[in-house]
Length: 268
Image 1 (cartoon, rainbow, N blue to C red):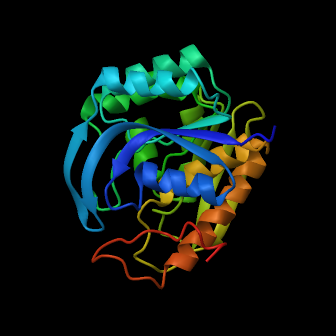
Image 2: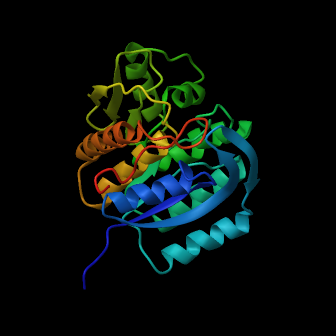
């Protein structure tokens, strides 16, 4: 029998389709993987912002996870928006129980519009419960700053921050440089075992269509890991994919705010 490369996203739903599980599933499909989803929260949002958030009850989140793992064994798991400390505690416990390979934690905290997507207690829970089980954590600069409670602005700040984040127990850290004030967009990858830094840099693309870039990059990393790539190659290929998706999506007009990237640019 032919087997799929299977990737599970545990994240929130974006009604506009640009971020969250919608972006995750598009990314999995575009990269040749079979995508599954566990929805942790429903959001009412569009390209201009988030107008409402509804948390999925804990027992139903657990039921979704159990349904997937009792039948289909994911080759990688990516987490996104986990609204509260209670949800984080539940998800972390279930991931420990089922022990899937290739856990990618995207610590989603703030939407592209600036709307907050987690409560205050969730930041501490992310550090103490999620990061220790992560094979990879992919914060942007504001998220890394929130996790470390320190100011991060330049590449010089990002490098020690990546090392410090690994101290919470995550094996690999990728701090995304999109919020830095640089001509290029440089992501800093740190592996805790080798204590080695690698820089992945691409020319910055001028566009307002950058909704869901973080979700897409983390999902791309999970996809390449599911297909058997090394962590470094997964980050490399994911960076190339998201850069192409941003570039291809730049000319499109969708909504009146931050539009999405073009997940299927390799096909149409």
